[in-house]
Image (tube, one colour):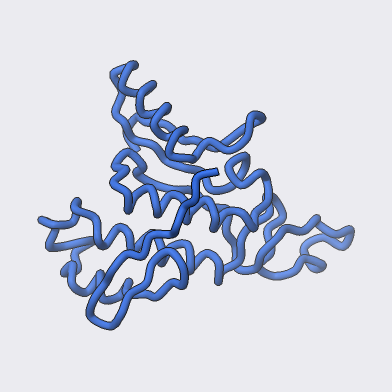
Length: 171
């Protein structure tokens, strides 16, 4: 990511909402910097609860569906199994395989769901209209490899794709 900003949330709470992203874009524009934003789905944006990361990613996916073009990436705290562990007195021998010893992480199943959701949004992006090859593979193969189904935010049928926007009630 050349220049740009990573939003991680902080002491004042999460900062990934559409309103926050608009504020960041305005600040980048004012500073004459590229309007490229990466959203950290963990840390302050998840209120330091790893189980909130998929909710953050769903919000980012919806913003992309709604036309937000400044969000260029996301960061996840992810491992094979969810949570975290302390290093036990017996050291490495007492560690649970695939569980973080640093930050609490979402597990592999949640990670796949988040990545599938974001990939499905990306596949439908207007940015791909003129792209024929990704990483040396024909785009059709990449797209077919990423066709997934997600309950809630995105749904796809065999051979067709459509977005189902979540209902958002203003409070």
